[in-house]
Length: 201
Image (tube, rainbow, N blue to C red):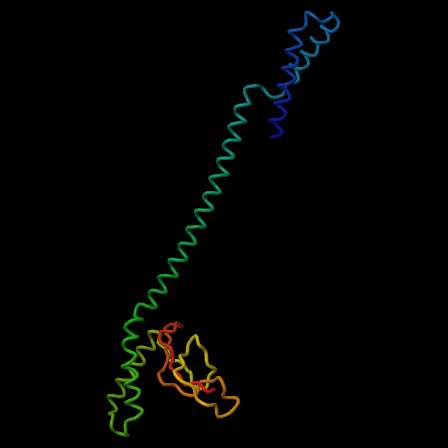
């Protein structure tokens, strides 16, 4: 920018000198000699040739274009990086929850198995059947299924569903889960079924 201002000032001085040259004939002889000397000094002190002006302008244009391209590149790179991270996160979530619907449909069967094993008399369910039930539970656990521990916990509307209330036996039990009617479950830390509970009040 400073170079451009310097060049512009030199052009202005040349223009002024040119006007003086046109009016030389009207000036006295002494002033004509001074003007001649000034012309000689100006010609000898010009540092930047006229031919270099377009080159400087082109350089500035290229510098501006490079800066704009660099800015566009950084913005594009940032957008692509955000897209890559978002896609990777969505893919991971999709893989983790791919079996969610199937597992949700199996949960009532799990409830029936647990009720059958807890209410059956000793020896009514064979050891082989018990091993099959355990294998099913272990497989679902490996897929990320986890039962909620709700009984005795403070009621939380984000994971519990209160179906009824019960008078609290003590002051400490108020606002806590008194009993669990139906278990709640997580799948990879995501709630896939709310726990149906009785709340002490």
